[in-house]
Image (cartoon, rainbow, N blue to C red; front, top):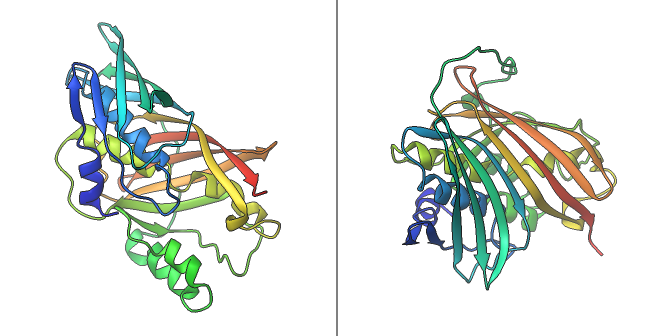
Length: 284
């Protein structure tokens, strides 16, 4: 999928005042990508909110796998419109069943105290290889793996940390990578936020697995996002500029892995924080 494909998927059809319909793009695994549902639900909710309020938090639960051949209906519930905050609930529906639900909160711009974590000291993205370039090492000896890793995506990724899947080690539970869209974006803050939500579902669960690569391999695991939370600290995030994802996994066990990401822009601002728990199950 290319960036124009993703933007087309995010061009939701409005059916009623707070009712939207979105389509899906094919995936190699045959089911809807969780980041797509996350992005569409965020966008549907944001389209019902006044322009003077920006999203500051999103909490979502993945309930059922989505069917890529069917449209997804997004039903947005107007929970509250307050003086400073606006709250929305969104349910994504397919075949009469809820496949995802989210709660999203919006806030007017206010002044307040400020502090943040320091941005990690990592190489600039221009000095790093893309994931597609790194996948070249698998082209002749593991063509199936190469095809999965080298497929075209709307997001360009340049990893700081490199994991050789054919020479597995038990790596530390951290993954740092530079990310930006592969193309031009419209000048719409809601669209940038939605695409960031899409991109935020890519590499989190991977970070929970890399400490165990000597014990298990990705093809023998089922990885599924269970819940996903985002906190947007800035309202001018641009996904067409490089963003550093600094991901770690504090805990994995009982069939689940917990991960979190701090997202910095090139100025060093912490613009977004993410947390996710996912199912990590050995294939039967």
